[in-house]
Length: 195
Image (cartoon, rainbow, N blue to C red; front, side):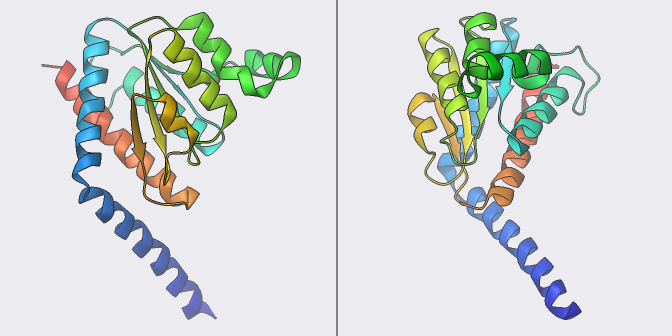
C-alpha cells in the first residue's frame, strides 16, 4: 500500500515536470512571456498601475504576484503600483450580495482603472464569468488585458490582448505553471526597472 502511495507521488511530480518541459519547448509561449514583461515594464515606467484578479486558488496567485511587485522580488527597490482586486472584503461581499458575484471585478475595473493600466487575469478554465466581465470592462476603457488560463483558453482568450494557455486541463498543474511563469515575469520586469 505504501509503495503505491509513493508511486502516485512520483507520478504527480513526473506529470508536473513533463508539463513544464512542454511549455519550455513552446517558442510561442516563450515569446508571449517576453511580451508580457515588455508590456508591464512599459506600463510601470509610465507610472501606470497593474491590477490582478482570479477566483479561489487563482485569487491567491494574483495576490501573491501583486505582493512580489509591491514588496520586492530579488532587488531592494521602490514599491511598484500593483494590487489584487479582491482584497477589499467589504466591497466584495456587498457587491456580490447587492448585485451579483459576476460583476465584482468589472465594477472595480470601471471605477478604478484608467487607460494605460493593465489588467492581469487568472482563470484555469478561462470561463469564469466574473473574470470575463472584468476583461470586457477593461477593453471598453482601452486597458490591456493579460490572461493566464488552461488548455484552450476558454472564452477569456477572446477578450485578452495576451493569453498564456497552459496545455493542461488539470487545475493544480495549471496553477503551478501560472505561478512559475508569474515569478519569471516578476523577476524580469524588476530587472528591467531597476538599473
